[in-house]
Image (cartoon, rainbow, N blue to C red; front, side, top):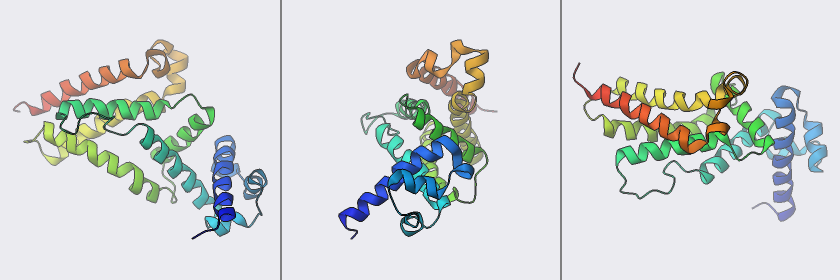
Length: 212
């Protein structure tokens, strides 16, 4: 087990890296700057994380874990909730995680995460496997219960459509803020957007349940 000073150094490195990566991104961040901000020896990053890139993925993993803990996919609803209730809770959870809590560092990390989702680096696959795919599998399971007779492809497409609709408000947030600020996520609020996305998704899913 790591001693208290060692554990403290690792946490300081993680917090310092969170700030430096948010300011500069992976390419322009340096191990020297991270260690200087953490008050750690320049060799500490390799000792605790293996490389700058692995520290970067640790920062993104930590960010995702904290988001999931704060806004779980069930949003605290009853375990016996119906599939429509679970779908609505999932959408609310995703939108709250995308919107963040107003922390500018968190917003920057969210942008780095979005960039990785759009064009994953070789270092991101393990983060996606551990933190993103299980959540998406959960959404697929909810939609499967709503569409018990549908093909697997239709279920996966519906799950992708729900996720994409939510992520639009994050991926295009700067464009929306400039061109249509009245429908920006922070303007409308999560609850209104969640209700709209849910209603839209429900209508689409219901259409998929109809005979061809």
